[in-house]
Image 1 (cartoon, rainbow, N blue to C red):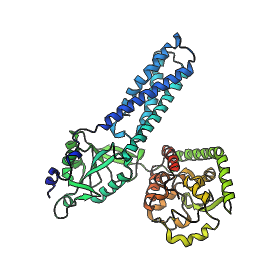
Image 2 (tube, rainbow, N blue to C red):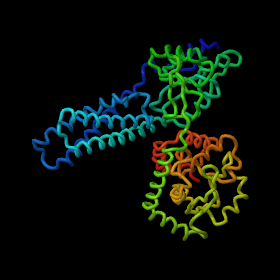
Image 3 (cartoon, helix red, strand yellow):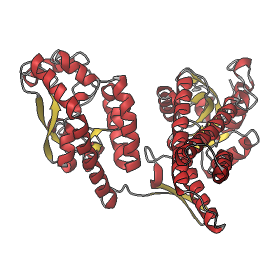
Image 4 (cartoon, one colour):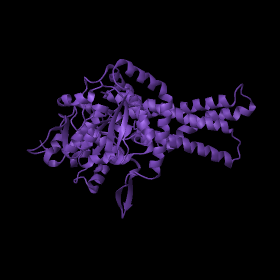
Length: 491
């Protein structure tokens, strides 16, 4: 079938699947977010007023009653100015929260400047309580709303229909990734391949179950046909600057978003910037900052937080140690040599979760290894004790590694600390995992733990090495709690 015939045919896409009008769910989502923003700041103003001016309102407090009412009215436009309601940031998390925080800072600074310029006396206690509290409550509300959206997306609702344009292998990888992580809200509804694969004798009818409806030149027509919200162009030489510009012109009248995936993989954040040179938008990639002031700050934060964690969790640590001691023979602690930054070996500390002769029995179990790489993992390892299985499920056996963090052998967040025999099997790019300290948790911990394949684990560790920051560390630590409580992938 010819490409044009395929686009015009009714058969690949039913009438019910077409959505000629813009998506409706994003509109009410943004309205609901606006209502949450309004009431979050209103609640903060009321709380600040009650705490700062207890008792019955009097004449001196009347201006603050008006200010309490005005805060949420001004807060929503401030969020609009900071682009906190942009459809492309819906459910993204970091970008959405970053804009709320920026709006809170600008709002508070603006209020201070206006009060100084007009010589208006404003109770500092009221402002100091209302503004940060309002921003915090709004962040919590937005977080809960985002989690609700993620649950809807796992059920297939509130999705953006996407046309993927690229070579077959790249499109396959994108489809698999988005199916694994549906919370991103992108559903590949159609594919456009090179002309040789879109029509003729070697034509491909579908990729990973998604219909191929045209070639690169038909991307705009396919998007219009299926009522797509976005066109995702993957890195390929055929889609150069001129072709991309023409595609953008063709889809702009339907308000279809154009998303371009560069050839750079797993490089994110402030490392990427666009610098125009002689009219050409060049993508500039900064080197990852592996040394310097940020590294010192990370080390101070790690050791301080680890020491505080040891003090706060000491009762729990004592209870776990007692349970291990009374339920199985052997020492409470398990010590093992691991490889740290730069290949330096150190002794990692963990609560013992296996029988005393576990290492001696490992060779007999090698044929049962369920991991596809250099790691050794068995879901139902017979060497694990009854208490140990419970400790592993909730990662309580890892808590003694806080001592390693205080010593400086490890970080709170980083790649998984490998065994020397695992490092001996490393090849090529995998050695890059060793340019930073290993972590108590990491991207691997919040992305599937032991359920990950070897390639996925390496990719996540390398992604962390290339993009690490204190903000990313805080984000990973926040996500670690939910990953631990779910207990999935822990064995």
